[in-house]
Length: 118
Image (cartoon, rainbow, N blue to C red; front, side, top):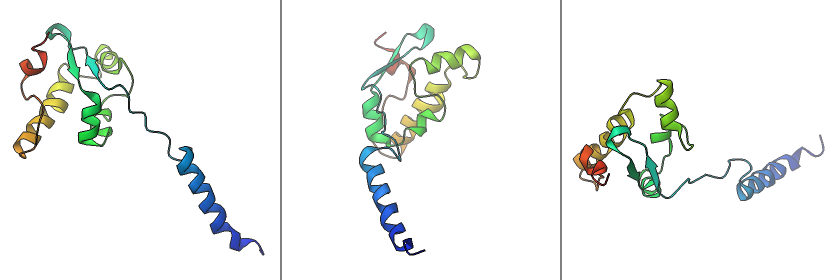
């Protein structure tokens, strides 16, 4: 194997190319800056999506529960795989209350604070 000394160089070049083009690790899809969540009879809830991304930094904190696509929450409700108020109570308000308890800036911690504009 007279070319075995080239293997580390080739691997390095492939990794650099992958990082620079996003091929190896994919480009992160930031989604919409703002999203409106259908909240049934209570009306819709405006969600500052970009602000959440900046604060949380981990999309999976929310998207481990529902897919990253428009209508995913409504689809899961219709299929019975997402409980009524599960996103709001077990995701949103729970996180906001924890941040408030930790002394951090937090979002609304009551239902009416989000639904008030509807």
